[in-house]
Image 1 (cartoon, rainbow, N blue to C red):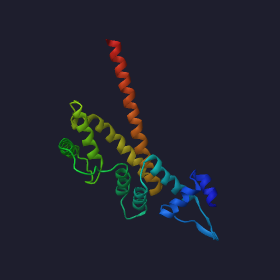
Image 2 (cartoon, rainbow, N blue to C red):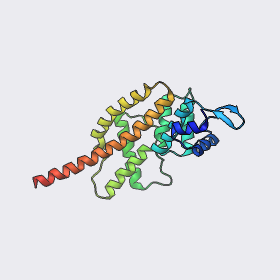
Image 3 (tube, rainbow, N blue to C red):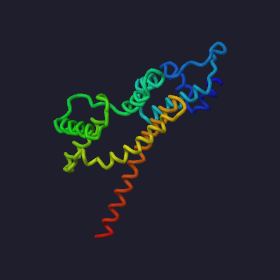
Image 4 (cartoon, helix red, strand yellow):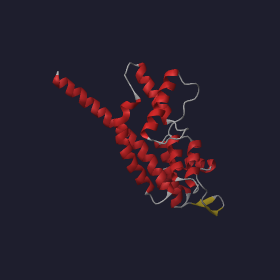
Length: 209
């Protein structure tokens, strides 16, 4: 297919496709004539993944490049390819962390060891959890990392199912895309469920008073 058809089938503009080609995120099509190239289904799927990483995951071009490299390297374990996606969704805080955040971070590390969750040192999530716990405490909430045990028990079960499902995909591209979309969309769904629960709890409290 020509680049115009590739654009129509993928939903990605020709300008964006050319940009991804220049950035090395998308491989060139097969040269068919001067200034013309033919593209295939691989390019459609690749563009779909790139757009998912950018639009759904919010990854920068540099992080998309790193994720694609991990995905394509057959010597890279799938765990590390998934890690490239998970870690790409956030950043480790830069600069010196406040004392209360560092104290919460130490608590998070103890909690992770207690749960026997093996997390890479460069994972942003423990830092973000520590920041959130510290912020709750600043506003007077009696927050402890252990307060998340029940939620952690639930998401651990669902995470097992998500990872198994992603790894059942027919190839690494589909597996990485499934992991990304499942992570981001499922997280958003859980947030909405919690908001619904809060509103329902508030209504029940009014009814009993």
